[in-house]
Amino acid sequence: MDITSESHSQHISRQFNHELEELKTHLMAMGGLVEKQVQDAVGALLESDSHLAERVVENDRAVNDMQIKIDEECTQVLARRQPTASDLRLVLAVIRAASDLERIGDEASKIARNAIELISADTGHRGFVEVRMISEHVRRMVRDALTSFARLDTELALKLVHEDDEVDSEYGSAMRSLMTFMMEDARSISSVLSVMWILRALERIGDHANNLAEYVVYLVKGLDIRHTDPDDLDEQSIVTRKR
Image: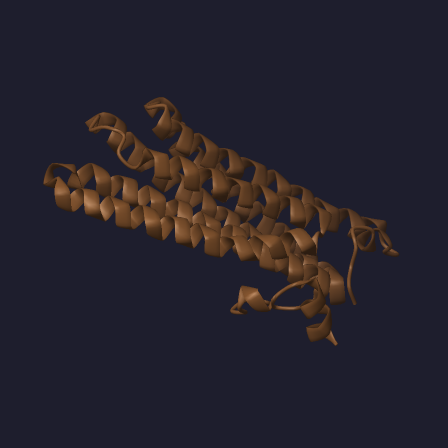
């Protein structure tokens, strides 16, 4: 059975409903922090702000703590309430989503650490245009993934699944450009490698945003679309597969 944003407000136990809503609320709070971590990490690089980058690294502990708290809350709901159907899917989706958000936080921390090295070396801004472009794309994906989860919006979620291929293409193009530059100027190898690690982290963030979108489809439709070709996915095909 499909669910809507009102489905979880119709339990006999008001406390159970409150617990489910708390899970979603805490996940959105974690998502907001992670989104800011990515924004600050990239901003620190582009603005040569090492203090901001250091704060991103320090704040990674807060992201980890939020995941642990959410996992504990989900475990308690599973043990005490033994949810079924859409309620069980919600708990499982929250657990999976929190894991991906934590990994996005890890990638933001990697970006910040590489930013600190680049700022210290002061070797120029080669590759920063690519970083800016891809970071804007994946940050929008993370934001839209969280919105689709909050609104149970499968249409937006499916749009994000298709967007991941675009990020992969942008990443591949940027990496080829930087590889060519390194071959032309061996002195740039160290700094360009750091930029390449940053681009890799951004590409991984896009992958995790894609995962979040897939969890929305699972939550709402009860369908696991992992490992499915995005070209085979749209609202109509999901309805057909469900039948």
